Image 1 (cartoon, rainbow, N blue to C red):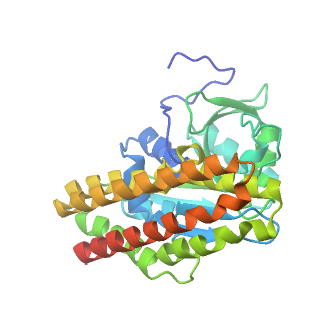
Image 2: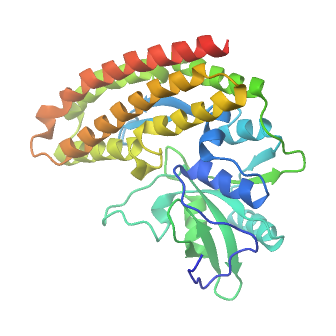
Length: 343
């Protein structure tokens, strides 16, 4: 690796840059336990792609491409690879710390849910920012200094004081308070996914996109965003609007951990792996459709970034409605085709 850290890394831990915090953290744990698998396959097997648009009172609007299936993406990916993945939460900082140190002392890296706003290695340009749905891997601990070594999405590992990590784990900021969350893994029955499991994962994502339980999700959610965003200036001042636009760019772009194109680039690569795993080359053709959809999302993300920097942003916000409706049409067609192929 070349880098020297004040905290010793666990023996056998391999660190790499990743696209998305959850799938990247999962891949770190899988590779450590001898299971080589891509982030894209973990995302798709876990039925991790969807669309959602929410605007809760007192919070900036949220627009993202990750799905929140039940059971969770982590558990579904585990079920389809023979790995038992169990989530844990506690209201006790002491219990959370003891669980973390027990696993690290047993030589196991630990996947943790945190509020990135409390991690000292993030720079939000002096503004207070909180997102409690962030996931990282603890891969070392120094008893003398009380520092934990953290693997995140980018290249260097980060030594973080236990006190800072506990703030990040115990944050109560909404909408995703981390609740001191961590996961445990059992790789004793690990295996490759079956073709039937791959098709089932695709079907679950297509169903959620085409027949969501509420209109904030799926293709309906994209149309809802197209109708709601032009009205943002009516409920926001200039600074709040600028932040809402920039925040939306972050969630669409690689910066926010979607792998770019609102998770559609990752999903494109998943479909290419799925075509090989199911021996169905028709999935490759749909992957081409999703590559174009990903490009369109990436272009729209750049529009959100550029518009956030304009002095007359309020006058321009409505310009996103037509591209969003066009994306809804393209997504509806691609997911319908996918659903037919795996039925």
